[in-house]
Structure formats: structure tokens, C-alpha cells
Amino acid sequence: MTRNGPIALIFHSLVVLFMLAPLAIVCLVAFTPENTLSLPTRGLSLRWFEAVFRHPDFVQSFWNSLWLALLSATLAVVLAVPAALAITRWEFRGRGFLNALFLSPLIIPHLVLGVAMLRLFALVGATGSFGWLVAAHIVIVTPYVMRLLIAAITGFDRSVEQAAYSLGASEATVFRRVTLPMILPGVTGGWLIAFINSFDELTMSIFITSPSTVTLPVRMYMYATESIDPMMAAVSAIIVGITAVAVLLLDRVYGLDRILVGQH
Amino acid sequence: MSFLELKDITKSYGTLNAVSDVTLSVEKGEFVSLLGPSGCGKTTTLQMIAGFVEPTSGTIRLDGRDITHAKANSRGLGIVFQSYALFPHMTVFDNVSFGLEMQRVPKSDRRPRVEEALELVHLAAYAGRYPRELSGGQRQRVALARAIVIRPPVLLLDEPLSNLDAKLREAMQFELRDIQRKVGTTTVMVTHDQAEAFSISDRVVVMESGRITQIDQPYRIYEHPETEFISRFVGKTNLLPGTVQAVNDRAATVSLGGVPVEIDAGALVRGDTVTLCIRPEKLRLTGTGLGRLPGRVAERYFLGSQWLYHIDGPLGTLMAVTPNDGSAPLDTGEPVGLDWTPSVVRVHRGRLAEAPDPTLEAH
Ligand SMILES: Nc1ncnc2c1ncn2[C@@H]1O[C@H](COP(=O)(O)OP(=O)(O)OP(=O)(O)O)[C@@H](O)[C@H]1O
Ligand SMILES: [Mg+2]
Image 1 (cartoon, helix red, strand yellow):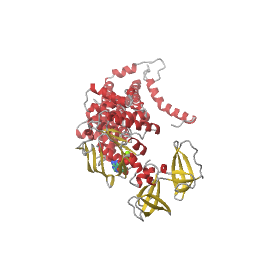
Image 2 (cartoon, chains in turn yellow, green):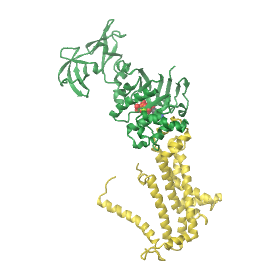
Image 3 (tube, chains in turn blue, orange):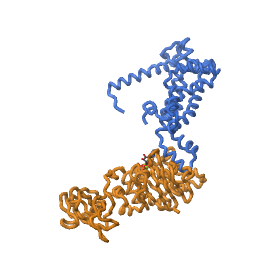
Image 4 (cartoon, chains in turn cyan, purple):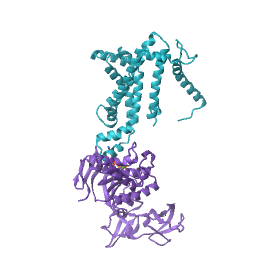
């Protein structure tokens, strides 16, 4: 790390301030006792949080989003672990293609994915199905999991596995007792990133949610197009809170600098 | 029949033969080292014994059983890797216990055996630590304990000491030998460090570009290297090209660029081109006018227990080593005489190949 000079320090502080200020303001506004979006000047109130939990649509969307994020993150990890192992360790035909395929959702705009998925769902008659929504989210979160897993597996000393193997362990035992625990930070990190991405996803979900599967960001978007009141701020604060907890956990188990800067 | 037998083992990667026709017998309880410069196929040979690399041809027998194509996890061999390859997420105790668990040793029997193994490597107090909390030497000993606790028929060591600093490496050499003697396990060690190979092995196998060039006791390899490559790879040596001038039944005279030198006659004939090898410590420095050749000190290096001199003379520059016995060393420019006993001169047929110095390749 290079030391920052005073000008760079001011610049960085401004950037951070610029990025954090809206979040901080939204979270503050969520505690306003007023009926309009305003900073709480006359004391703090939880009335808008209460309003959120009283609002059946928001509650349902909250659970939808939570389940969706839990399921898609978990299934993406289950899918990505063997895929990442195969791509990093074996030479086979179509390896490069498979790698590109798994990472391609990263560069396809979610808008395009949304339209494509909408068509696909209509074709297979799955419009409005929660299972297919999960599948669509798996597609967009898997690349993140793959990236982290490939990094974890690439920096892996194969002789550790050989040592276990030579001590009489079967291939399955080597995977369970040695490989998996050693790539666990990558697995957990990947899962958390997938969770955050799925929980926050709006653009694609707008196209493929049905009234019963509407996610929290989509619900917010729908609500906000009609009216803006401090309840929006309260929902935002909840999303920010959940994401922040996930990011803190991620930093704990994997280290944010490893993901963002690629340091080890 | 020997305990571990490699017969005509060859491993090819495409057109490259990493190992060619290696035949080696190791007796029960023996400590054998594979010694050779980098890339000569030592690791590949060891990996074939371990079962991680499949030989292209040839057979490997262990205690009479053909294990050439047996899976690595069915061979029961103990392996110490160059990187130690400890399980980072397990304590020292669990690392050592892993192999016993795989062998389905009952839990009550595992503890005393793990403790015994840790005792042997002087790490009994470290059972609860994680590998990252250990020094290099301690990790190395955990790796050793983990390999010997399963009581393997053969212990395989791939450059086990190369990650340690010089002082610790020397201490560990003796400790390794000591432990191997105590448990009596047949051991094959890979190394490119000749001092390491010599000090702890019963026999040394010298390899050169995939082939075995000599198998012998350390002393014999040093004193009677079979090829000029070995004499250069193993220790320092003076190599002198010449032509046989005269032969009688006990001695032969070799002309080294016009300078006649007498050696013990082998099966030499007049006119043979030969290379004479004389180890630096076999050259004696005598007073001027004495000895076989005159010379002059060109350089002087202090090696702690010894002095190394470069002596200019009629044969070019020769290396000579004298023990640092406390007497004053010779000064540069000082004239000296060079003497040696004819029996210390080794003769290789043929001219000195202009090959790069193999000792440089080794590092
Ligand atoms: N998987 C492989 N594919 C292709 N070539 C290989 C492979 N493994 C080893 N080789 C080649 O085989 C030769 C012998 O390699 P090996 O690792 O046995 O050398 P080594 O004697 O252990 O050397 P070092 O002292 O550097 O460890 C080398 O030329 C190496 O490049
Ligand atoms: Mg090697």
C-alpha cells in the first residue's frame, strides 16, 4: 500500500462521503416521525418501520427475497464447487468454453437477461413460478461464486491432498476432510456475495416476478412509482442493514480486500 | 529378493523421458538417497514409488508384491513432501492422527501412538498447535511424525530439509537419521544436496538426466566416482586432460600438456586420452622445490575449518584444500610445491566434455 498525500486523502474522503452520505441520509429519514421524507428533527420514531411490517405486501416480499437469496446462493455454491474444481484442475475439451459460459452473466446486462428470461418462462409455461425465479437468480450469482472459488482452488497446494491420499484416505474422504475445509473461506465468501447480489437484484427480477413472487426491491420500485413516503426510507434501511451484516460477515470469513483488490 | 525393487522403470512425458530404465533394489531397513541435479528425474522416480505418477513401463515390487499399478492410497507408504503438506485446518495431533483414523485404528489406540510419534520428533508439547503456529523445522518434524505413525513399510522423503536454513538443516540431518535408525523404516530420500545425501545414507543413487549413473556407498561415490560428471557433481575436483605416454605393469605415465605425471596403472594403453581427477584435499602443499610440481598461490579463501587455495602451475590453476590447523596460511604470490600420492588420482577415459559445471545446475 502506498501512503496517501494530503490531497489524495481529501479526495478519497470526499468520494467516500459522496457514496456514504445518501445511505446515511436514507437511514436517518427512516426514523422520521413526519409524514414526508424529512430528516428527523423532532425526535426519532419507529412508526415507518412499523408501517412496513403492517404492510402485508412488503412482509411477503421480504420473505420472498430472503428465501430467494438463501436458495439461489446455496444452490449456486453447490453447482460452482464441482465446476470450479473441474475447470481449475482438469484439462478437457471445452474447458475454456465452460469457464466463459459460467462467467458470461457478468457481462450481459440484467435488463437483457430479464427480457430473455421472460421469453423463456413464457415458452416453458413457467411464468410466475418461484422455482424458475430461483433458477434465474442462480444464473446471475454463479459467476461471483465461481470467481472466488477459482481463486481459492488455484492457490491450493495439491500435495496436501496427496498427503491425505497417501495416508489411506479415499477420494471422497480427501474432498470432505481436506479439500473442502481448505477452500471453505472461498465457499463462504462466494455464498455471501451471491446472497447479497440476489437480495439486491432489481432489474432482471422486474421482468420475471409474478404478484405472489414479488421481491423486496421490485416491491419497492412498484411502490415508489406511485408514491414516495418515509416508508420507502424504512425499507431501504432494512435492505442496507441486511446487506451490511452480510458484508461484515464476508469481511470476517474471507476478507474484503481479497475480493475487491485481489490481495492474499 | 530385495524389499523394494524398481525394474526398468521409465516415465515419458510426450517425447521427453523424465526417467529412463531405472533399476534399483533397496534392502529392508536401508536408507537410500537419490542424488542429482535439478530436473534429473528424482521427484518423478519417488512419485512413481508413491503411486502418484504411473510408470510408462517397468515394474515396482514391494516385499515381493507387484505394486506398479496399485493406487497410492492402498500402498500404505509414508511420504514427507518438500512443502510438508500439513493439513492447515487441523492441529498437530489431528494431523498425525489422520493416517491412523484412515486405517481404522480404534480411538483408544490412536492417542498413545500419536503421542509416541510426537515424542520421537520432540514435539510432544506442541500437539494442540496449528501448523501455522510452528516454525519450519517443527513443521518438518510434524510431517515426519505423520508419515511414520502409520508404520509404513517404506518412507519416502522429497527434499525434506531443503526449506530449512543451513544450521537447522544440518541438525535435522542427524535427527532424521537417528529417527530412521530407531524405527528401522526402509527409507528413500530425494535430494540435490550431496552433503545431505552423504551424511545420512547407507547408499547413494546418483541420477543424471533420467538415468542412474552410479549406486554406491557415500564414501565410494566420493572416492571412486564412475563418471567425470559424478566427480564434478559430488564435491570439488581438479580435472586434468592428458594422454597416456607409457605403461608398465604397476604404473602409467600420463602427459598433461607436456608435463609427465605418474599414476597407478589401470587397464590403460599407450595413446589413450584420459582425464585425471584429483580432489583438492588430496593435494599437499610442500615447500618450494619439493613435491611433484612447482606452483604459486594465486588466490586464498577462508572456509572456516579449511583454507582453499588456487595454485597456478604448469597444469593451469589447481584447487587445494588444507585444514585450518591453526598454523599461518600461505600468502598469495608465495611459491609452493604440490605433492600427492599416486593412488588418489582417479582416471576417466576420454576427454573432458565441455559441459557446464553440474554443481551450478544443482541450485
Ligand atoms: N507432469 C509433467 N509433465 C511434463 N514434464 C514433466 C512433468 N513432471 C516432470 N516433468 C519433467 O521431468 C523431468 C524430471 O522432473 P523431476 O521433477 O523428476 O526432477 P527433479 O530431479 O525432482 O528436479 P528438482 O531437483 O528440480 O526437483 C523434468 O525435466 C521435468 O520438466
Ligand atoms: Mg524434485
